[in-house]
Amino acid sequence: MARVQLIIPDDDRERFVRQARREGLSFSAWLRAAAHERLEEQQRAQRFQSSEDLQRFFEECDAREGPGVEPDWDEHLRTIHESKTSGLPDV
Image (cartoon, rainbow, N blue to C red; front, side, top):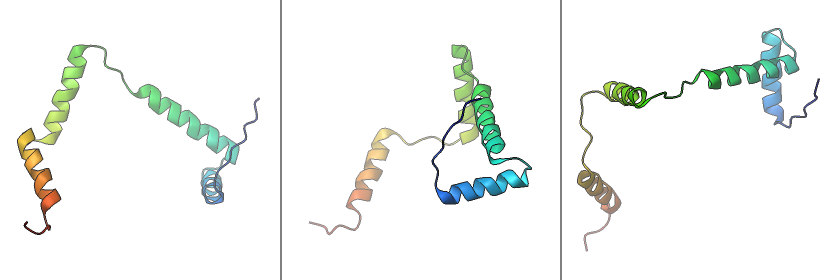
């Protein structure tokens, strides 16, 4: 078995050790479990398999955002300009 040295702030170590104890694990076992959970989470992330998957993803994003329409670029530019010049004296 490999040995790994980990340098972390003392406060983090204290918190991690307390949580490991709450879960009935050694600090090493808790760190291994956390690393395994992170790997599994990354592996669960699905990749797009086709352009249809990508299209479906964007449709779901649009549905979540609701029926509103995003302002056009000129309106964005006006808002930015107004924000930059607000509070400045008229010259």
